[in-house]
Length: 138
View (cartoon, rainbow, N blue to C red):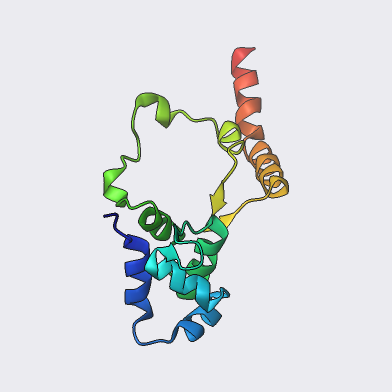
C-alpha cells in the first residue's frame, strides 16, 4: 500500500477549514483538493499526481514552501536527497541549468521568456569577470 504524504500533510494543515474555503484560499477546486488528500481521483480511481502549477498554488495560498510540497508529492524527505552528489554536480553551468524543462524561482515555474531574461541578467552580472579573464590572458 502506497503512502500519501502530500495528501496527509494537506489534510493536517487544512485542519477544521472546509474543503471549499481551503480550495478558495489556494485557487483550486475543492474536488481537486479532496482528490489530492485522498490520493486517488474518485472518477477514474487513478492516483492523483498534482502538477507543479497546482503545488505552486497551494504554496502561495498557504505559505508552505513549494520544495516541501514537491518532496511530499514524490514521497521523499529532503534529507534523503544529498544536495551535492558528486564533484561534477558542484560544477553545473548556470546556462545549462536554465535549459531544463522545469526551473523554479521562489516557487514559480519560469517560462522560456523568463529563462532568457535570467540568462541575459547573468551575462550582464558576469561581464566584468569575463573582461578580467581576458586581461589576465593577455
